[in-house]
Length: 94
Length: 94
DNA sequence: TTTCATTTGTACGTATGTATT
DNA sequence: TAATACATACGTACAAATGAA
Figure 1 (cartoon, protein in one colour):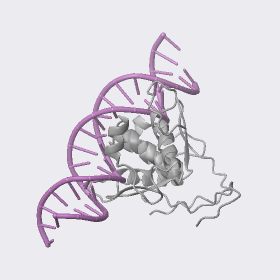
Figure 2 (cartoon, helix red, strand yellow):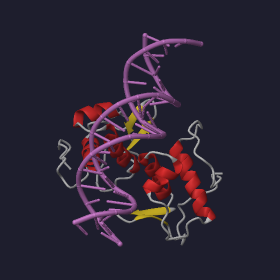
Figure 3 (tube, rainbow over the protein chains, first blue to last red):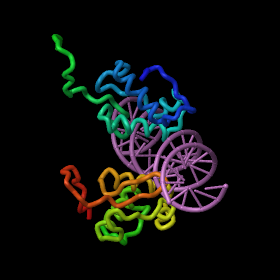
Figure 4 (cartoon, rainbow over the protein chains, first blue to last red):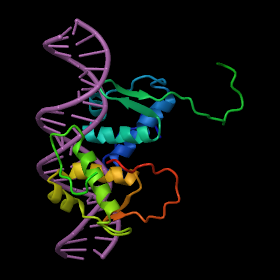
């Protein structure tokens, strides 16, 4: 998924799934580091021109994927990347 | 949870969680047998006097608990009680 | 302590689309 | 074709949690 893709309301894929894919791509690209806060719901609403419920639905997908966690009253944060990604053969830096 | 409880809008527990608890109790009581259809969303809306989204939210809880499954265009059904999994830890929320 | 702004959570309303019968 | 039922999407409003002033 292109992290710079735009929402296509005509596409067969539901809008909330599109947004989830975009945000997932942006996290993987490093737009927000682990433990960093992603834009608030109102900000996402403004950026992508969606309703808040649609935005929340996309975030819920990311939560279920374990990519982000939300804290009431504070915000939504990129999950700490403490899982095992064993695809790369060499990792030398801490 | 009392399967005949009524929704209390003043209670601290969210309404959708109350409804989920009531429906769970009714399923466990046997109001609807496995593979049987539970009332449709409009019927639940009418019975409990809630908004449709609130009703859907309660049903989503039951889906995540593996208690029911929904089929677009048909309805929501009590899951077959062939529990061979180990993940369902939702019970006795009395 | 109180107040305020920010952010997420809950609840309701409405409209339209999709799938099945 | 039509009716039924769930899915998606937008809108509004208020409550609760957090942190800062």
